[in-house]
Amino acid sequence: MPRKLHNALTAVTVRSAKPGIGKDGKEYAKRYADGGGLYLQVKPGGARSWVWRGTVAGTVRLVGLGSAYGPDAVTLADARELARIKAAQAAAGVVPMSDRKKVQRDAKAAAQAGRIAGTTFSDAAESFLAMNEDGWKNDKHRNQWRSTLKTYAYPHFGDLPVGEVATEHVLAALKPIWRDKPETASRVRGRIERVLDAAKVEGLREGENPARWRGHLENVLSAPSKAKKRRNERLGRQGHHKALAYAQVPAFVVKLRAVDGIAAMALEFTILTAARTGEAIGAKWREIDLEAAVWTIPAERMKAEAEHSVPLSDRVLEILKTVKPLAQAKGDIAERPLFPSHHGGALSNMAMLMQLRRLSPAPKGQPNLTVHGFRSSFRDWAAESTGFSHEVCEMALAHTIGNKAEAAYRRGALLPKRRKLMDAWAEYCAGKGAATDEVENVTPIRVAS
Image 1 (tube, rainbow, N blue to C red):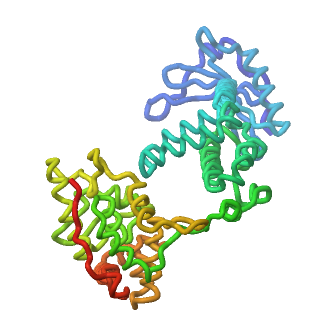
Image 2 (cartoon, rainbow, N blue to C red):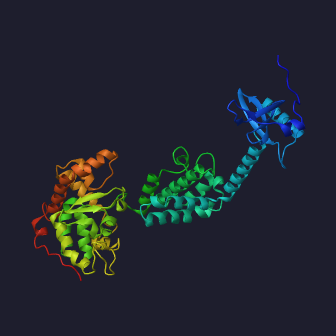
Image 3 (cartoon, rainbow, N blue to C red):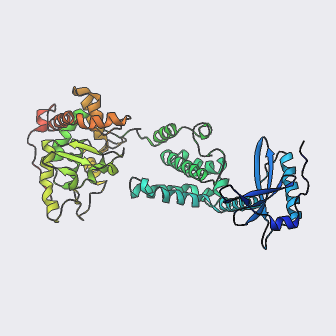
């Protein structure tokens, strides 16, 4: 059995030890054992340091104990004491590490603790908004995020370290608005959840997300859909956009064509294309191809964030050719709105709604019609009065299709069928199916200067 080393090195050995020399004559790092797991390691060139070598849980580990040369050198006696400490740690099941690594680890932990303590929820939210700057659909969406958090979350825990935000704080923000502003409250909850999730990824908090709905807040707050329904019942509102029955649309369009003004034409354009209000009033001439009779709405202006092509019927083309001179009078028309306001910009989102209400005032005690409701009128007409497939009708409304490959196929393959659908809708709105006395003597379009 080999003799167990004990204090084999001397101060002279430490100063004079040389690196190893290989058969090729090149130097290599050589270790000199002192006993107790302590080694003097001499590298090529003469640099020397202390190393403790031991086995922990079946794994051999090397732990640096410091330099053995120079002004900051660890003496032989101190190296032996450090080796004794490391051996004791290993015997106790603790994985030893070098003092340098321990200092670095402790410093890193202290810095992270300071970062966690110094990062408030509002700081984390602003950081999240900045990091996702390119992900927002538009400036309005970005401003809504910041505004809702500032209004509803910051007063309750904006100055609290993000790592300390708990369920009680989230509920304090949501409960006051959950009953009367369910849609806003639901959005605020989701935004708080995303900010806290991002903070966890960055190491600023641990544990479950206190803003999580499923399996957590759903046990305390009523479902957003139920809260919205009860709110609407209290206010006497209907749950969906109030729509005109499709059988009444032709008569309404007759009255609409008799009105002089941009708002009336914009409304008819919106009805005939089954578009959303924002899509119509935000439309620019660069999106229109009159020769191909197609309106291509870019992804950033669509609810589903996907480009949408709308086949244009003859009547829609007639409307566009009538209003085009208004844009041409301003020079380059590419960035001009299809339906400009008196100030030159796009129409207000209330312009078409006010036009609708002037032509079809709601009976006392009944909700007013909405422009968006004409999409429902179109869908009901397509389902009940035509033989067009469900897919064609859904694509006409730009409703989301889950499978991306299928959605891409339908965009191309169904365009001719959708053109037939939109032509049929335009013909129907022009009077087909309406009473004769309701559609005769239609007044031509007139454009206000």
